[in-house]
Length: 223
Image (cartoon, rainbow, N blue to C red; front, side):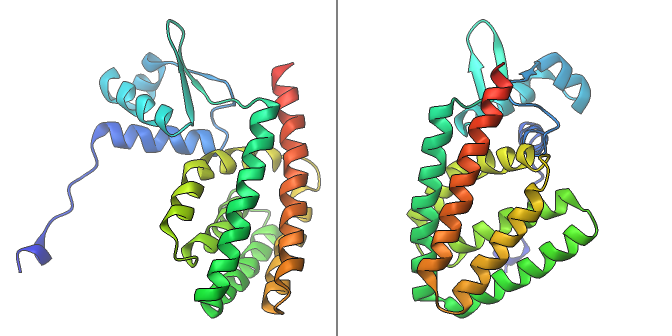
């Protein structure tokens, strides 16, 4: 009975700061390479510098923040080589996760993908860009929810926030969302028809297109 009555402890200040900064990076409030000054963040969040410092250290371990000695903390930035490696890593993980998810629990995966695509369509109609991007992430996350392989999940979790951040920046480009929706709709439809290789080809085309666009974005950011 005692276990059932356990009360969830509130998050520490450092955890609260970490979550706020993470969301600021993912949603583009903080720009790629932007300086994250402890004093400014402390004032913004209404807390001392200690939890801010702890939050930045945690985000540094997750790859969202880069800490440079004698200079401070900055939102991550990627070289063109980093972008290529990230996208190829994604393709390997997502392709494998799709195969395993279809082996273990195909009905649940296909139902969820169909539901997400429906919600994505509604978000597009409402011009709810932030909601659409959340659903975009959910779509890809679904492969890993049903793949029944913790190592694949952990591998994807290591880069998922970085991928979401880049997705946010790319969403500002003309026709990006329209093309994205077409691809997600095609992947869900092809998988439901049992055309797994065709679906994975669309996924590869999507990620490869993202690779080129990410590289262009990085180039612009470094000018």
